[in-house]
Image (cartoon, rainbow, N blue to C red):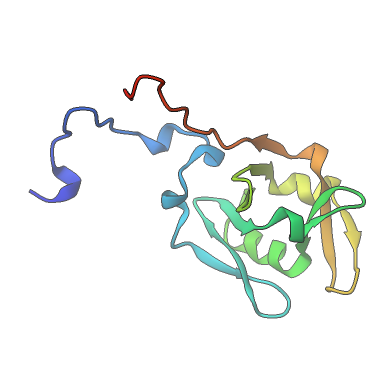
Length: 143
């Protein structure tokens, strides 16, 4: 019997990921997708299951004025061609996850070029935010 077909042990739960919204999928289910490149040829994310996933540091990569998340136009076009319908940004500093439909980025985004090529920014108020939940420890040593 292989690991996939092994019976669940006490305390394990089987999760049906196909029933979860795209933005709640665990990162392990978003690996191994189609790589997406910026205009400079660097890999900036991937598309898997209709989601363009990028992991970055908000302190370094989020636009400050106005507060927004920006994308290289070339990367958005590639993601769309690869089948992306949604965009998911993971801030690796805080664990926060931002998600929005890709069409919203095109419709409500604003064009800019501040020395890094043509970009489109989407203001933070358009993003849905999912905070990372911290695990609370028990006072009495139990789970």
